[in-house]
Length: 494
Image 1 (spheres, rainbow, N blue to C red):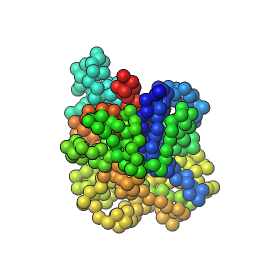
Image 2: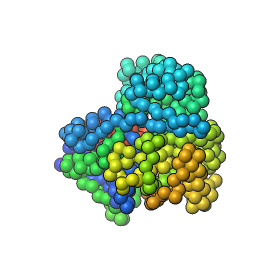
Image 3: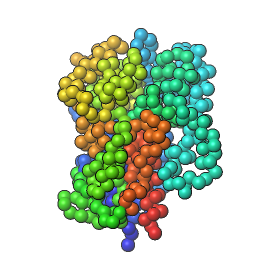
Image 4: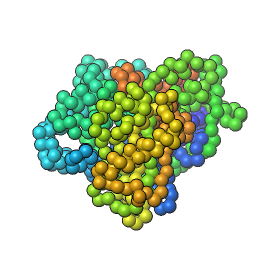
């Protein structure tokens, strides 16, 4: 009889792990507290408008393809993945927008037009970022970095011997500023640590790997929206006989003598040989696991990542001057991050991200309209924040004013509106203080020591998702599920 594995949470990490475990021959049961699978990767459909609620851009599509191939499916039959061009359009105050492209010839032309003095600097920066990727990916992305015996390989020793080449001792901003002359390009490349919820003025420059992933390996869209990935993973899981239970909240992770026994749902214990927890590691230790108060307290001291305030706007009218992905920068980027991470309050002049999937897929909005996903970086929930409704309204006006200064006076054209706040994120996804990406990477230690995928306190407990290794974002969460499933197969098949 196959061993029974319970997966808590149907986010990308939990689904990835469930699919792999089922393919390995385990009896897999997945419990999701919400109505829809996908975790933060959700979908809203209202009055002819369709919105992705979480990630809006896919990177490293080979990670998706490998999962389906492992499970016995052809990713091309499940998903239509297409490159986005430009990857992002950047708006700076008092200057024309700049298109960042993953096509190197196009990027060179764009740089020559706008930042000719930095064209060669960009090439050097990308070589530098690629080197970091080649050095770090095998060890810190694709391997269970906390499993010491697995890291006793020559490749790991090579990385450690050439540690300086991954630039861990400078901050992202310090390194970016050394590469580029124009402050607008410095701001553009300072943005990338926000992809894992961190501060470019504190995070180690090793995170300069991120622009290589996006601009070197490419940014992609999935037809139907990124939620189509969740639907395809759900289909694969069901085909492999994963038992999926939605609107079913796990109340406790049951254990005895440091060994997992199962979970408790509606007061009833459900036995399992192992548990793969896709919920936030910090909140899981506080809310789901009894008897490990010191561990919970230690985890609670880790600095959470950025949170976010998201507006979903159905807009009357079309805006040909916008791309599918757009950034409207603040004037003082460093002050913005000081506000968020030091003062723990939102910036008065926020950087605004606008994603419009109807640019690629017209059916996501009624004719003559667009679907705007609007994201503002926010501090994690804390006592410094004012009334949530007042705060949301204030930021909404700041966003509208910023867009207006860029020639986008859209307030009167908002046909429908929905908002997701940091508190919504905390409640809906059991996210630590409303953080989107788990813990921040704002120190050398935190950047390289996210919580492990295998618990050292409870045998049979494993973790997947953005709060554990290797981190946040679609490919990282999928890889966390892979790493956790492989560890389960190694330790629980004995």
